[in-house]
Amino acid sequence: MGDRPRWGGAGDRTGCAEVRLSPTRHDLRAMILGLLYSVVRSLVDLLLIGLKSDAALQVEVLALRHQLRVLERQVRRPRFRHGDRLVLAALSRLLPRPAWRSFLVSPETLLRWHRELVGRKWALYARRPRRHRAAGRPAEREELIVRMAQENPGWGYRRIQGELLKLGCRCSHGTVRNVLRRHGLQPAPRRSQRSWREFVRQHADQMLAVDFFTVETVWLQRLHVLFFLEIGSRRVHLAGCTASPTGAWVVQQARQLAWLLQDGHIQARYLLHDRDSKFTAGFDEVFGSEGVEVIHLPYRSPRANAFAERWIGTARRELLDHLLIFGCRHLEHVMREFVEHYQAARPHQGLGQRTPRSRPPTAILNAGPVERRDRLSGVLHEYTRRAA
Image (cartoon, rainbow, N blue to C red; front, top):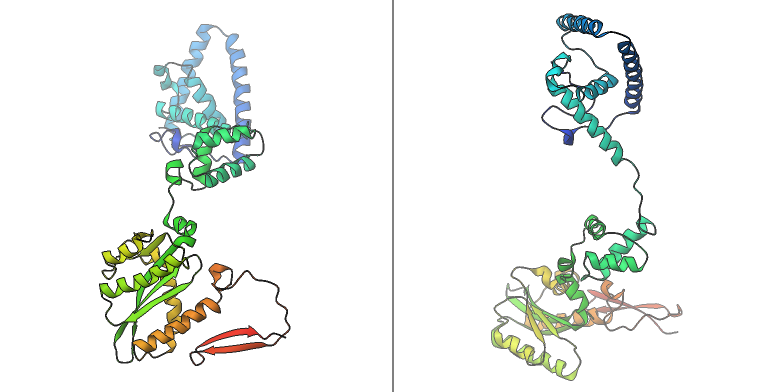
């Protein structure tokens, strides 16, 4: 017998958590007008009741109840306005529960109307603009919180709260936590853990990468090329080419590079290589004796050695895909020419479009003509300006 309202919640079992709180301007105006009309009518009824005797009131109540029964037989589902619902919900709180039988709607409907009124009350309260107690603009405060968290990974919520207090910004540590969550920043213990990318970026000038790559000759023979790459300067050291890279051969190439470490031509504290069986324990001992820490990369993780993989791709795209290799000596000659071109003439994006051997750019006068130098029969081109 209860009436489902046109606005408000879904049903009796949902409660005020699922009430649809989006009244339009027309609904608010209609509710206010209906409320005023109901209040005026109730005041008039109260004045008339005060002028009547108890017997007359009892007779009038009996007459009204009988008329309600007649209306219930004729109207299966009466329609209530917003003001009617508000008045009936308020009056239901003044009457005892057994007296609710005099209402046209069921007790569950009255309770649901009351829950919807409470939901609308809190919805209007939540829409009120909040006053920020902290000094300064909220956008500036949020920017400071994010900046401090990024620049100081070890600072927790309360430490950032204290630093803001020194700057005249008052806020709770919960506010700091909510701001960091919105920007996707982890708490201090997790935020202070450095990723592999950050570690490589911070120690790039002290890191040395080593790797193999293979080349197929015209006679379908597979050759292996071993190289070392200084990550910070992008300088490449070609160790050698062989058809059978044994552990002893790899250790011998490591000893030759260790001489450059002793002479100071290479500054390295870390060596990165994968878990290939060709990198034996003797290979690691050669660099360990020079004070270089060997870092074994995870299995099947080429991105962990991304700089070496990038150089291999450059060598294939710019050189090996355009030549036919006839043997080990031919491959070694070709690779040494490419390494010289790579370090002396080829600009690099990671170095600000400079070459590994070049100095910081200076002003160049556009005086002389541009000349081209060919390497490997025109596979590689280098451009320079002739001095005037």
